[in-house]
Image (tube, one colour):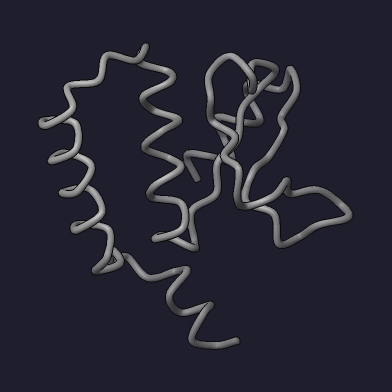
Length: 101
C-alpha cells in the first residue's frame, strides 16, 4: 500500500503517459478525426485514465454532456472509495475547490 500512496502523492508523471499522448497525437494526425471538443476530451480521458491510476475526475450536473465520465474507474461514493469519478451535482464551488486542491 505504501508504494501506491507514494506514487499518488508524487509529482512525477508516469513514464507511460508520454508514450500514450504521443500515440494519441500520431493517431489524430493520421486519421484527422473531427469530433466535438467535449467528445475529443472524453476520448483522451479514456486513453490516459488507465495509465495514470492516481487520476480522479468529476463533473457537476453535466456529466453526460461534457463526456468526463469514462468507462473505467467507477464512481467515487460512500459505497466505493476506490472510484475515480465524482458526481458533484450542482455544487460547482465544492467541485472547483476539490479539483484544484
